[in-house]
Length: 259
Image (cartoon, rainbow, N blue to C red):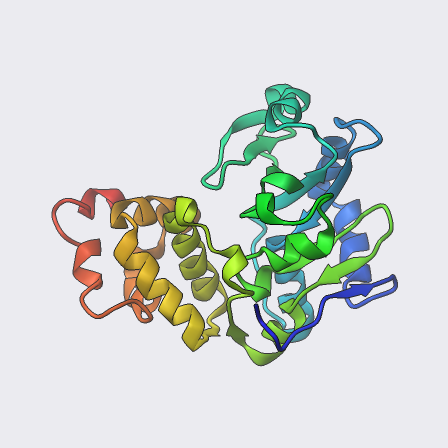
């Protein structure tokens, strides 16, 4: 566990209130409202991670990030099947982490939707699941941020500190999943590439271990989907991986992935 950060609940108005008000008035924000209305009133829908991280980067560092997708977590669904049945035809596929990838309209923003209980290693957390436990089971501190649209509150567990320091760290071992190791390594590389932030020693150690235990081609396929133009920036992506990793990205067996 990262002992240098505290779980915080920030009631509105907070540092992202204005940005989130603008988001709710935008087309992606209206799509999110439509998505939320697909669920019963006793289900709770939260936005977590990337969108909020990118809004914070914009506010604190003037970094403008393109909105690629929105991560949504749902509390109250009895099973993933019940969640998918509510999504109906909006569900496009299952994403790399086992959630539902959906879209409210053709050409609209993509939402990655999970049950809170299905988040990484949440099966080991005390019941019922809480937002604090959810953030503590995150992989990266810079992603450990959540917005509750019902209350307007912002919940965070290290994201603001990571953005201020320009450095990414692990939240703790609870966020590491051997079943998703390739997807998690790809995610670390993508976040590092997008932010340009340095990574902590603990995170470099995780990346080295993940590289050795994952399938490199699977990591590449995920990065290609998220960063289709990243081929020319491979050196930047790979600088924190073990020496000798780079040739695996350009050998005959994998070159076609980036063709």
